[in-house]
Amino acid sequence: MQRSSQLAVLSREHHVALEIALRLQRADEAHTETVRQATLDFWSSERIEHFRLEEEVVLPALAKHAGADDPDIQRILAEHADLRRRIAELDRSCG
Image (cartoon, rainbow, N blue to C red; front, side):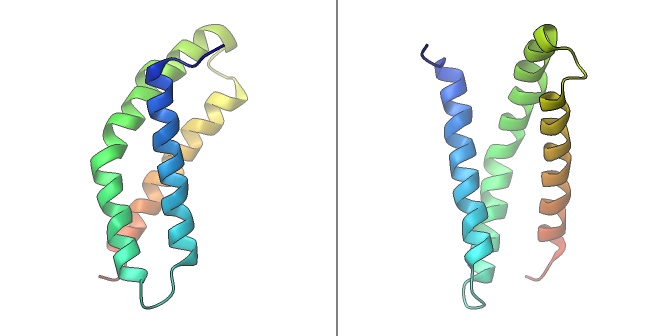
């Protein structure tokens, strides 16, 4: 079964976010600020709509079938909260 085009967009955004996370992990001292700023730029431009779609459309649709207490739904919501916290820390950090 082929994914809907809307889910393909979310999937691509996840891929970009994973690439950025790898860049953050691998950044040496000389590139830390550049990678930090690229991360914050991506976050501010992509996160709002991406999280809105997942939290207001995808997860409620999944909850109708799996139940709101589904472990995957709970995990995704916890990951979103953790990402928001980490980005806030990154934003407050050096720079």
